[in-house]
Image (cartoon, rainbow, N blue to C red):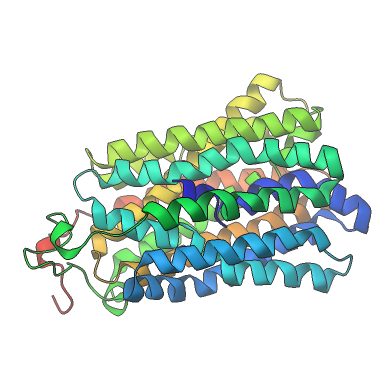
Length: 394
């Protein structure tokens, strides 16, 4: 949980909303150009996710996350020196994506899924609370750093989290289970892990149903999160209120993580995920316009966060349930690609809509449909396969 909180999954997405306005003013860029950094970050990370997943399958999660956390912290802190050049700006984000993806749930979730089977949903939900923790704490830290030293100071201050918090904890106490510690349902009595290969998974329809659902919901959510401070501002609220709404989003993520993870362990997961993904569609409706009440904005932020809590659980949980753990890192890595690419492209599209129309209503309407369709697609996955027969070639 702490490793996820201090990794590349939540930190950039909780700092950029607060520095986007000052960066645009200082460099004279529009919101689409400012958002392009996280787009490059997400695309590079997505393309390398299968590689990092394969490293985790082969060498274990521990060395991958320790090195990635260290390099991510160093590079993120160096964002203090972001240049006014658009090319230089994008290069910083590209490097961050290339070295940071190993500190995300792509790697951490493999270890959790190896430790847990019967209560895997709740275990993953607790691990993924790291993003909620980050969303509650990081905007406040970043805002104080900005107030004290300008927008650049937010990066080195927040970079202390992976360097001084996550790395020492992981180095001292984090490990994967030994073969004799692997639970029933993950491996047989000899410790041999159940699961099919990435090629076999991609040869079935379930993989592509899940892939498409993830892409739609990630696109709908990613830009809304990055632009939430701007959306709140258009309704007439201050930057301090916007930072507080980001905290409400974090609470929504937290509730989504725990509630959805708990219910995944007890009910058919796609049947739980479908109604859960209809809630952020309501959020998009509440956030439309320019005169929403504070209560509407807060409820919208909460329901939007609930979507993020549900989506990450979906990728980690369903990848293990439908494809097994033998090649989980590679499979999760490929399924992370639509999540990362959708989340990366979305902010720049939200920014373009804002630049051209002066608001976000058009893209929020599209997002409503994407949440609904993405959730409905999961209903076509069918019943879980028997994990004991889920081996390569079967």
